[in-house]
Amino acid sequence: MSRLSALRERVYALLAEHLHGPALGDAVAHLEGVAMAAQLLAARRGQDAELAAMAALKHDLATYTTGDASGHAKRGAALARELLDRWALTNVEETERICAAIATHSAKKHVAQDALAELLKDADVLHHSFYDPSWPLFPKDVARYHALCAELGLTGRLKI
Image 1 (tube, one colour):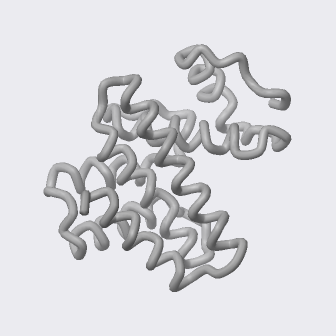
Image 2: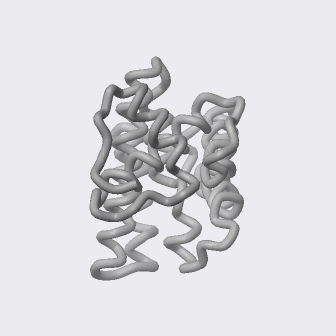
């Protein structure tokens, strides 16, 4: 089993302990949507697609497992570190990069120094933007969304 498959299996089990029905489906849809966007962006940018997907699959776990979105990026990084250490799926450098990316993924207006951190923010914006195009974009996502459209040659969506 690949590391990514093992991580998915464990993340799904953790989510199932805390969520049920539509809430579980929404959580899986978001994490998988961001993971897919992260892999696409990693391929485009010459980055590690597996590491990008691993960060994406964990980026909102703190919110989903506690029901509390306050400070979720920092809490998510702490939870990711705890789980990655316990599950032993990454080396020390990979754990550090994943946790740093998760810790800053909500700061959409700030440009991070690490390429994985920027990729995770962009993947999150892509999922927010295209999950349901009838929903307006979050104001903090608009500039990043336009930059992504230019990078990917996208013509955009109906509402902003």
